[in-house]
Image 1 (cartoon, rainbow, N blue to C red):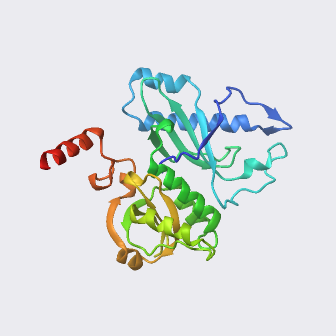
Image 2: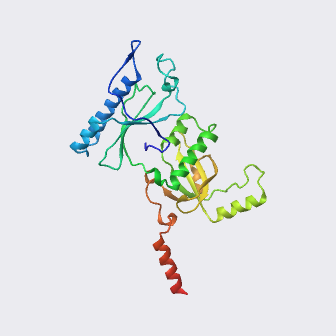
Image 3: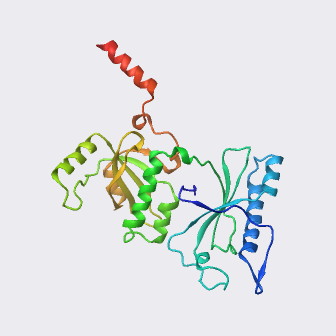
Length: 284
């Protein structure tokens, strides 16, 4: 998993004490225990850290990055009289440290209810957060995930929704037939403008190969270079054969999500534009 940008911070650290209420251990006890598990896991698997960085992790409190997992019914709602109902929602919880000497955060990922009494480390993620420079592809991915949640709930179960939410898509150039009047009520002038925009754009399709299924979730739309201005024209679930028949070119695999777009789809730099204009003048 790469931690997507829908995560939000809910705690600034863990308190170094445990309290007892009516003979039951409090949430703080379980959170402190989870932090110790995360700290031990990080120090074991982050061999690149020097002694000073290891001391930082050992003696500084983490922050918690959390997000609910869709469709969870794993935990009953009456585990403890002092635990709020929210705590029984299954969450992805990253116990995280930001080392002053490094650009990336160190996130120890695990899944648990909000009490964290059954939280165990699953994997270590090294993540750079660049919220001030969100790419068009990231914006498009967020748009697709929201669309899937709000509109495709009848086509996908909770596992498939979570797969889209917590995995990166592949990006294709495609030639699907676009639908410029999905409601049948669009004005002719609006249809003409939409077709004109599409003709001047590239048809990009984000895809997720759904787990335990042969079908593929597709989110198709038109955008400029590097998917700038991309919006969903249609979305749904198709077979691998149908997708293949409409694929012009593979642009990015999920593993290449943060890599530069191939030259054909990338923005031209000012230098390249200048060189092009100079070359055109010489050819006159």
